[in-house]
Amino acid sequence: RKEVEQDPGPFNVPEGATVAFNCTYSNSASQSFFWYRQDCRKEPKLLMSVYSSGNEDGRFTAQLNRASQYISLLIRDSKLSDSATYLCVVNLNNAGNMLTFGGGTRLMVKP
Amino acid sequence: DAGVTQSPTHLIKTRGQQVTLRCSPKSGHDTVSWYQQALGQGPQFIFQYYEEEERQRGNFPDRFSGHQFPNYSSELNVNALLLGDSALYLCASSSPRTGTNEKLFFGSGTQLSVL
Image (cartoon, rainbow over all chains, first blue to last red; front, side):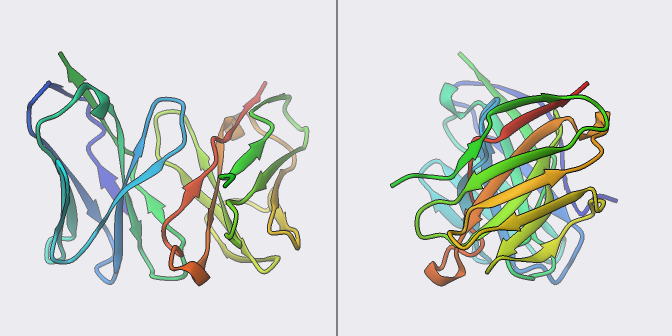
């Protein structure tokens, strides 16, 4: 089993749709969680941190379910510019900042 | 404010050769992490440097080594290149002193092709 696992997609959705991605992680003691966005042939960029109580940033909502060891990302009112790969990132052993990335979920928003 | 810079942007090598990649962290950052990203996969952690020492290491062979300089810049060296080393090599900087310890800022990467 991979330490951080994501559905690779692609998720093909029309503009304006709501789409959700899940990610599972292996270490129940993990404390820090993030979503990064990576555009084609570009570097990953931090999208948002994921807090225990859940958090929202505009059209993006991130949630953590510790009991089931998964985090989720919800995107409302999808825009064409949301097309990218979304990387789930976990600090699995809480040692420094050795972050473990999932394989990424590819999203394609179509007109 | 310069972000993370990496050089070169592209590199072509043959099997058995050695390569050195370079990274300058974002201003104010003192920690550099290196990642390898194969096509269609997520970045894989190679190692991390802080205070000129390797602090953490991922599951990569000794052919992968690095160095950090007093100005916080870093190099990644790969010896005896294999075809499977072809990938995008990403450098990320952060700083525990500024509360961004876990928030990585990435450079645009070096695309290494091994023929």
